[in-house]
Length: 490
RNA sequence: GGUACCAUGGCCGAGUGGCUAGGCAACGGUCUGCAAAACCGUGUACAGCAGUUCGAAUCUGCUUGGUACCUCCA
View 1 (tube, rainbow, N blue to C red):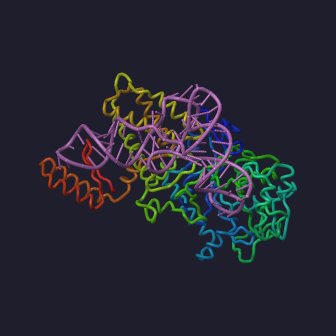
View 2: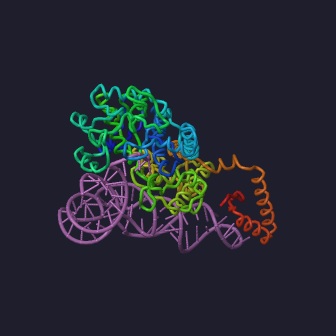
């Protein structure tokens, strides 16, 4: 088993990863709120924790990966008089709320599949766990950390803070919070403004509502994660992940809820991915500066100079460490596209390498560096840097500038496959393209290239150049290689 | 206002007290009928100022600029 270190937000430092019940690992990640299309920002946690999931599984852990679907409970406004986001969207589009949910869940899955993000072991939805959430509230209430007010139940932060400490994850101090939130409007039903809803009584216009011992209503914003985490991973589990913007108040409230219900913290390692920025500012739904994943895939957006494939997006995200911000730009994305293609070309070239009776390359050293990088808090940019060293090695082997034994070649093959495909989760898009698509049209282009090849044999440069240049004008790039001509869409 | 964080070559980004990632772009070369593609090679950058040190981009202080969270947010 590899020695893996993980940066724990709780301690603000890297810690050796020791699961509670090896070889089992429990991991919970905050999933999407399904009232809109996924954007580039959503890809970051999905891909970050996909690599965590893949690597933990790869080194032999049995991982139960839970990623929720939030389909209730997020209020529209900061005040408590808001309306459920899903319900609002449903009214606007005159659809059943669950129809809206299903539509966006499907689209989310499609985008994630395209980026080769593995599906989690369990993908529970908040609306499917109302009963569990009500039970969870009862426990908090029994332990004295909740109070009822006008049919709604609130978490009593002041009481909680007397016995434990509210704000330990994000470094907040309750007194400071009280000062800063005081000026926000009518927190009429709450004891103090920092208290948050566990159960909210529904106004007549709310169409998503459930009965409870207190009122017809819906569960609070933070409750689903505590509830479903507990249900599927236990009162204590190993990893909880999510975006940095969820650290406060969402994850802070989760901790408070779990401690209030069970008397102890449930999560051992808190992991937070940083934001993706655009022109140096966070890309976010509320800021309206986001670009959806489908827009990236199609190129249909004013800020995009071209389409970017799902693997380009994945590679782009993996080229930065998950705890750093990552600035989007066309230039950066194009760089990722080129780099990714180069890596994939080398993976093809690796198959053509011939063995020799001795090795002039050091595969063991490469292996050590790759594992050291991924074990160091999933440092994928370093992993990729070493993979590019391997690309140079492979190209030199192919050009017979270096040589390699059968044993080493086999080792190199395994290593490259493990890291590129299994751990980083990259895949060649050429194959996917060739497999699908219109066969007749592929053959037609191939035929043109054959004609050009014949023309070249006859030194009919006028004809061969016409074919090449006209194809280019239509949108095909012709590439002459040692094995003949290839083409692709530009 | 409170609390954090960041500032790296044309761009994106690692790293870190001395051995000065990587990708893209640019430039040069190999190949090619010419191109393109592919491959090879070339760049001593770390906001500013002061300090600690034999030695700092890496540690400390100050200055400047930027970001995030405090309200839904990945």
